[in-house]
Image 1 (tube, helix red, strand yellow):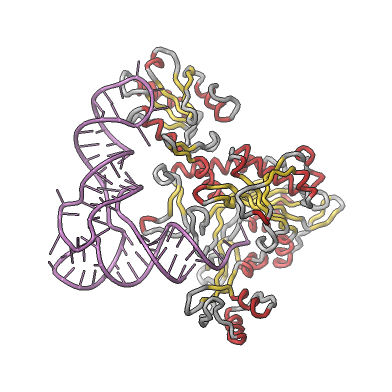
Image 2 (tube, chains in turn blue, orange):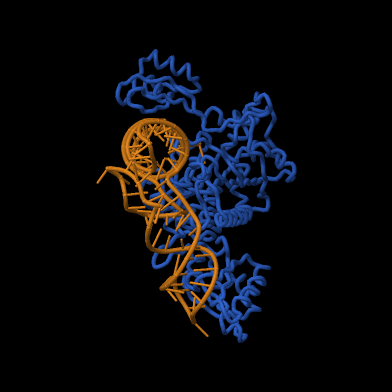
Length: 485
RNA sequence: GCAGGGAUAGUCUAGCUGGUUAGGACUACAGCCUUCCAAGCUGUUGACCCGGGUUCAAAUCCCGGUCCCUGCACCA
């Protein structure tokens, strides 16, 4: 369906495909951009001081060294020559010595394995030579290629690198939020599960810089204190469900109120803006072992998807402390501390991170309804095409009248026209791409009695004059009016 | 990356004990018909994953690769 109707498919399939890379078709890109628009509107709307920026996708080694990615994104892998099992070199050594083994080179790992006479834990076979695997794609810059660089593994670093510039340009205020919607790259070992794990993917991330001593005071927590939040604790994350627990009780359990306030905003985005069913959404806690090295508090945003077999991560809410700015301060020898009022500090960071492709996939998964007919029940706001115009039959001047109406509607709303096949077939086609409303010109239209508007999910219709049509559709799309308007 | 399975039009599939004009259904397109939900009739377009080998002859047998699926490992 995704392929047939022009949403998304594997890239370069003309040449057999390229694992981990996907292309968007004409409907997929519309859906994705509508999602991005809604995301920007929702999250930049949280504060007057949250803004969108755009930064380079290639970063020099020094910047990624400071961020920790050069060291922590690298694994040394050792493969058994007999049974073919692969292990992480540092874990093998740690299991044997019970000591931390970090930052070793491949030669050092090989030497230690020899020295400790480590064999394959699975079959006792001889282990092959170790090799380095970094999840970042290296890039050689310039004719000599001496300036080592990488495709960025996350958009967040672009924000951190521009923090000081924007802090000045935005006149030294905290909290300050900087968002990027852009591409990131990770050389995944085995990309699978459709568009879930990709090597080139889109992130939408908002980094909020704040003073931990005062952030909570700036937020109207009381207004959301009693909102029930759907949470799965680390211990029960493998289960299928979630708890409803009030925002206030989450704070009582030890989470900062500013953190919980943002969890509530994320939940609102999914439940109210994207209209994901309540039971298909949850915020899943990650324990210390699962968290990235820089995250102090970490909840995954998860959406239940049939095609992926349950709850899957589509984003995360990460408290990164002052790790990132401190890292760049050390790496660049440039102070990242700022003075706001009487306080001088290196701001802390709360990151709201979303995988755009994963979100688009989740929407397709959740919207897909197959019964007597195939319908994509997308929210009206983000459907690729909001309205279609049809002639009921292809005679008596009806197609001409319908085309004229289409041209008029298009001046205000993206619209699709189709006169091939029967009227039922045309309805079926737009149901599949999730178009919420369609307009049909019939014989009564010729008599000045207006046109019919059909709703995708109910298949119900009502009649409206041609003059009021565009206004009516706009009210339906914005949610100001409900069907029948 | 390892092990197992798979790959025929946009989709599902027949053919796979070598020799077929590679067949069908749905979709798409054109036309006819049609006063509201994939109806019907006629016609048309469109495929053997890539490379090599065996053979007089390969969609079919063999080898290598790519991609997909499942499990393991990995997963900011």
